[in-house]
Length: 271
Image 1 (cartoon, one colour):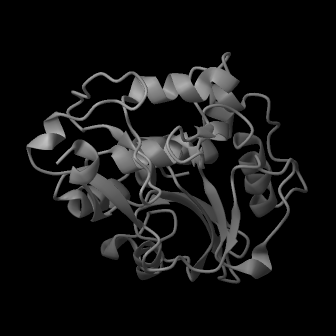
Image 2: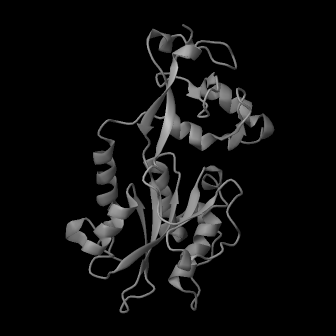
């Protein structure tokens, strides 16, 4: 039995990393917003509304109710999401966003944050990530100007329970150590195995570098691919999706993610 026959579909929960925008519905604080990072949106908004003692942030505690109106998800790692969160919270301190003017005197905080978001999605590295903009409250939706890159879809409504789970092909048995790269025909000896196309029955197994070079043929001036045509099945693939599906995460990931979410250092800033 060869490597192709040794592959199989393995259902593996993939981690969810999102950066969200809260809107305060309390008449006393109405119009205030909060930007945060989460691995579980429904749990996180409950924590914000329950107060700091229940895991909420200092800046939202006692000022609810808060509504999560927008979330950006699809980040390949917690680090990527946390960096995005920090820049969105502090655009004036981010060298990537130095071109964005500060909040105008008559500009609402909500609209200022959307203006910053629109600009963030146009600059590297965020403009090359496979992100999704999801309006959880459609009545809050606003058109971003400029609009997001074409590869970033717009979605509406709550996240579906299975949204953070994807199928992943894995190699089993001793053939896992005998996989040949579909592009260079050399053994794949990466500790995490080959990059595999997520489409069913696609035979692609490739070194990360080989597939990156293949994708970059259409964008030779770039260092990181955005997307490309799968050499095996000819479907268009987003590079960020491939990397996210390829990563191996610890068995206690949920506990690690909760720690990142609930003790993020920016919650302690008293502004």
